[in-house]
Every structure is written in structure tokens, then in C-alpha cells.
Length: 139
Image 1 (cartoon, rainbow, N blue to C red):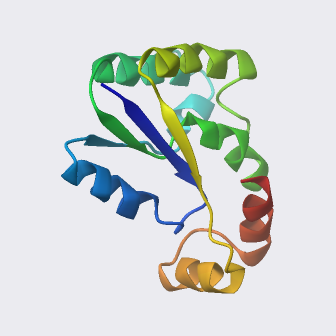
Image 2: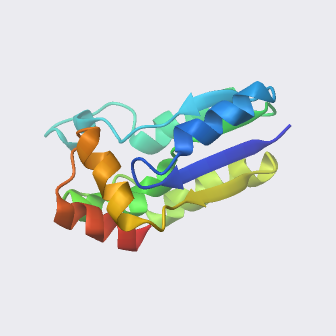
């Protein structure tokens, strides 16, 4: 059993590659940004880390391809000027699960920046050009 993590800026082909793995018997798990509930004053429910651990535990010992990952929390908070929902220590906790599942990590990138930006615009991604440029550099 193995895990594959696909990460990168919007419209770099993560979902397309995930679908290729699906044809090989992998289950796709689409990860998304942390819920805004974590930033609400007085929120007292499970943490983002707790929710991710639940997802990871449900995926243990299975062939899984993750379309996006918690590693986006090292980039997106800077782009959208929000507080990161994971610390480096919390990412290390998640990495233990990943190592136990023989995880391969792939960073998706499109070197044709103009074509990549056009795809983002055409698909109405919620990024302005400055945010796109910054995210492109950070990823």
C-alpha cells in the first residue's frame, strides 16, 4: 500500500494526474483549504490537525492519491494574508503517517507561466496576478 501526494499551484495538473492513479487502483482524496470555522472567535471544536489525523487514519494502509495536501499551509496563508492553521511541528506529526504509508510527494509545476496564468483566469481561480506570481514562487 502506498500514498501519493500531489501538491502545487492551481491548474498545474494535480487532478489530471490523480485520475491517472485512480485508473491504477488508487482512491483519490481531495484535500482543500482549512475551513473558515478555525478562524472564528470562540471556535472550540476539533483542530485542523485533528481533522487531518482523522483523514490520514481513515486512509492508513490503502493506496491513496491525495489531490492537494496539508503542505499548502506553508504557502496559502502568505498569499491570502491569513493565519496558518498548521505549525511545523504539526506537519511533522502528519509526516509520520506519510512515512508509515510509503508516501511519494510530487510538486506540480508549469514552467510556461503565461499559459498557466491564462488557465487560472479562464477557470476563474480566486487569485489576482500578484497572488499568482507569489504562489508560483513559493511553490
